[in-house]
Length: 424
Image (spheres, rainbow, N blue to C red):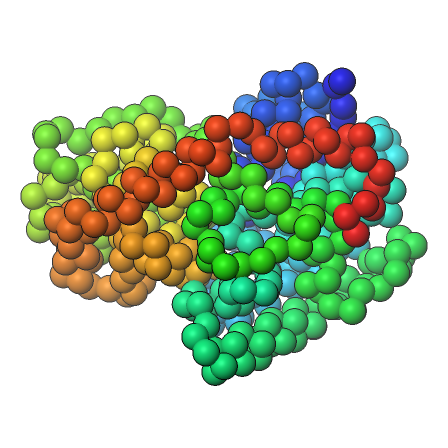
């Protein structure tokens, strides 16, 4: 039976397309779908067939414009500083504002299920307070500590022996401490809405009926164990609405697709280095700058076509290698197409994603300040060592099996008949 779903998301760059892909799929099945989102996302929401609803007191951002970016993690000097900005400016600091806006929308127009991007704890607690089923969408490799794997973030290999297991326990405790400064604001939002306080911010991420992980289970550590309410439902492979048409560079040399972040991460110099590297190789380059960088500002040799955007899913049908910041969306689309990667992590979850690509043998990693010569060597290595493509093709087959049915939609439709709080 048709149901009403209220989604909540924020201008989080690559996190947006997978959330809207799920919203689109529900809408195509006849459900009512509204999406609370920053105004900068409303065209994308409408293109997905859903109804956009603006935040009123919660932050409004536009990650393609550095001046309007809420987090501005490109200004952080360390990964911990970037995490603190996310904690204080999205996850915990404005939790009361996100909760207020979400509850106001639910009061004005009730919904049967609340679905929120997993970082919006304020929206998630609003669903909990409203007494309706709540699902969070994790748009990357499951980002919280669990048994059987190293804590996510630093890009660690699985533990070996007692020393490795001790490392994992220490880092798991450290992860809780890193979020602790956000706990007072989060608990103030919870108690203001009649909910009990939580002992840690990480605990709050689990107070939902379902966590739907929009990432291939095959890309995560095989021995990792997850809570019962965490479900891997496969990645979303849709391109964003702004991707445009495909224009390939001329010739028949191997195609190298280049895509760094769709949000601003001070990446123009990295794009220039990649373009210069490809100019030294017998390849064609399709370099997409994304909305945050003007393609006219990226000088490139004659064998590299620079464009603001392109539908990566279509381009990957022609590609031999992808050079990427290892954002989850670009990395997984490449693997789903059987295309190996050269990863250049810039921050956020990218070090973790790149590490999993390496551990699976589907690509290599270079530093974000790598020289054109180093980048060229990495591309040449992945092009000419067939083991990388073979492993990427193995992962493509596993991803195809995971996405043969729409598990995310099935899980959300099942929640419409569930009692709220069953997974908390």
